[in-house]
Length: 315
Image 1 (cartoon, rainbow, N blue to C red):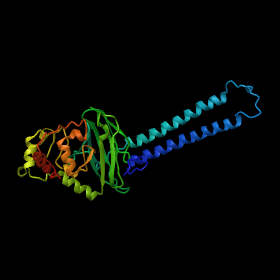
Image 2 (cartoon, rainbow, N blue to C red; image 1 turned 120 degrees about the vertical axis):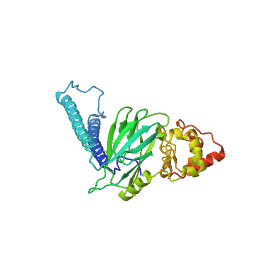
Image 3 (cartoon, rainbow, N blue to C red; image 1 turned 120 degrees about the horizontal axis):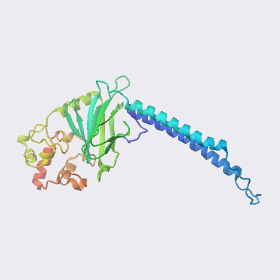
Image 4 (cartoon, helix red, strand yellow; image 1 turned 90 degrees about the vertical axis):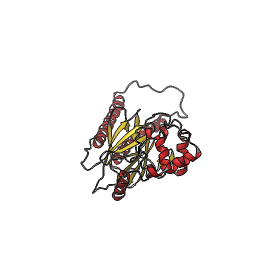
């Protein structure tokens, strides 16, 4: 779906759209009034054919006009400030209900780590949440942290922007009402691959979400002892950066790969997660995402085939 604030599907996003319409309406009215006065002045006091070229009588100062152009803008600014404050408090002042889903999102250069602390799930670049409705809301409260530089978490159809700052914890929440896939991204310049630090929020019916949770809580589907690619994976530096539950791989610097093939994209949205793209990514991440911190493994053709075949089993 198009990532637009004017197509909201979540409670905070609805509030932001209402505020945007109010601001646009008020400023639009000011534009119309000012434009009408300018046009009236041009027509009423423009040069006529019978003008003799002499300067018209000059008026120096008008207390009424000066009072009007001071007081009216001041009142408009006060109205905008009060309305904006009310909406901000309504969104950020929301108390977290006991049944709310808890998600922790950690910004990295240039990908998102997603944790579900109460569910024991760790994934990357995709947040899965259940859809709610007016009778049974399903809010998800999101804790935001950064592992390196300043990022900004933004899914336009679900919530407003929230900065992700090193050594500081920020929080936001969403309450999606319509199943679907909603695209967001980092909205604060964070380095060379800032534009390819995308994020997908997958909103699912409750039963589908429960199945996804059960799948993610399971160990890796492949038995590493019986797969040549798994043995190769364990012999490389991969295990120092990535985790595959149930194997010796327990690195924390890169995404958790336990259920790699359940994700839609590679490299935080740089490519679709297909066998061909996965092979290309493993062979040379720099070619697909310049500046990526993952180094090329410099594998032979057979080794690359074995390793890719193993990664394809991680569902």
